Image 1 (cartoon, rainbow, N blue to C red):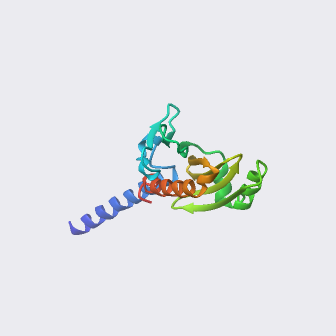
Image 2 (tube, one colour):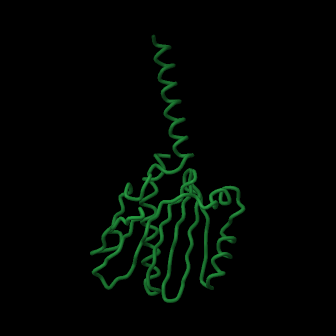
Image 3 (cartoon, one colour):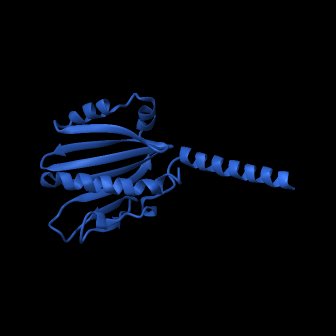
Length: 174
């Protein structure tokens, strides 16, 4: 009986590990942005979360003079995942593409658990934007933060905090 119990336990552990690896390889643990626990207090007093009809979530303060906004989207892969994984899309590639839209742009790529992604900072007119795109198994999570130029440091820090807070909710414990 003792040998059977060890075999059964080993088999159970194998199935659990296989299932978690399959989940990680097939995308994120969530199916919609409203499954995430977006925290508006990251942005400050008066900010709220609104879930849009298109499935996006937005952190903003409609009654404030402060016009910082963070939007979170979940969609399907735009073919960048494979390029990020195989190295054919790099920070230099992304920066060059972004520079075509304006002179103030920079990008970096990263791996986070089973996911790959990039972070892009750019300026357009009198606004700044920081965007994170995270790819896994055909899905892409985008966090886009926009603010007036004077709030560049604050919105960049807010975007980083929101993005880092979402990561544990995405990877099924991977």
